[in-house]
Amino acid sequence: MRAPLEIGFDYTRSLGPTLSQFMTALAGRRILGSRAADGRVHAPPFEYDPVTFAPPGQLVDVGPAGTVVSWSWAPQPLEGQPLAHPFAWALIRLDGADTAMLHAVDAGSAAAMQTGMRVRVRWAASLVGDIRDIACFEPGDGPGQPGLETTGPETTGPETTMITTPVRLHYEHTASLGESSYLRALQDGRLLGQRCPVCGKVYIPPRGACPTDGVPTTDEVELPDIGTVTTFCVVNVPYPGQRVTPPYVTAAVLLDGADIAFQHLILGCEPGEVRMGMRVRAVWKPRDEWGTTPENIDHFRPSGEPDAPYESYARQL
Ligand SMILES: [Zn+2]
Image 1 (cartoon, rainbow, N blue to C red):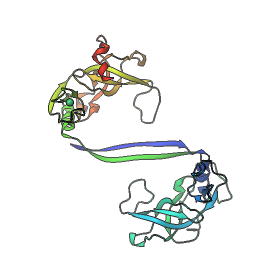
Image 2: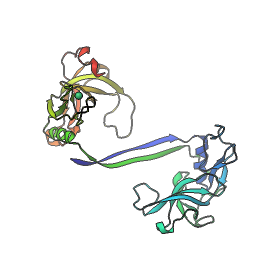
Image 3: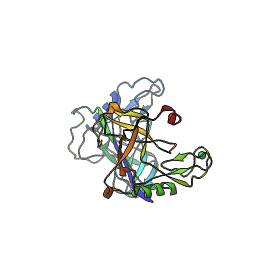
Image 4: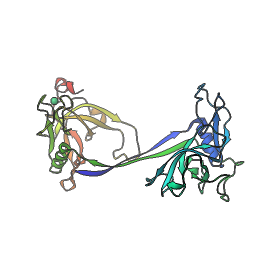
């Protein structure tokens, strides 16, 4: 079994005083570097001097042209990269700087790329004080393409203090044999684990091998959809895409007969009522929504049974 998976989130952080200046200056078509105690100019600027560890003093202008120090051709650009057509990733030492910065060079073909070649900035069509204000570099010398309206170096726009970095990972996941039978069983509403032939431990989801004994786990074991909360946390932090409104509980649920807990939502009671040892039962989605996915189980809810004694799950903590 295989399926495409996508992991993505937007990473937002504050820039701090030095990188705020660097980003803000880009909106005015200026690239700033910082001078270290040994006299070397770093571009992009360092936040702390690599020699003295002190914050940089006054930042200095570098570029907008520079020299390619090293490069690598990107024949198939990925989504979100600076250019949609083939380009070079290059280390570019901007004029006035002693260090190189990584950026894209729009050279047309790999044959047009050369270490030591001169390149210059191609500014983005609209400048907002973001690293993407540098659209890419292009072969040539001098100030780069003229004629775009900008705020100009003398005008200061709003200071950039935060940056949002989208992080995306697309990949094709191939399920192992054990995982495949686990997923296929879920389509029938069954929970299938595997038992180690040496230590007898039951793993769900199955991992294909026992991490303790290193032997294949080929015995399949069907487990009930009822278990015990071993540990839990109350989620109070909202985040984009959250499907349950905080506060709510995610817990490590140890199914009866399993030797490893897995994490799931606990709903159907107040967050404050959830406790270690609480007995919970799976709440399945409507049968016509079942697929070969763990999401067939929507959440767990209290089963109403007496709490499990501590000794029954102490070894799982
Ligand atoms: Zn084992």
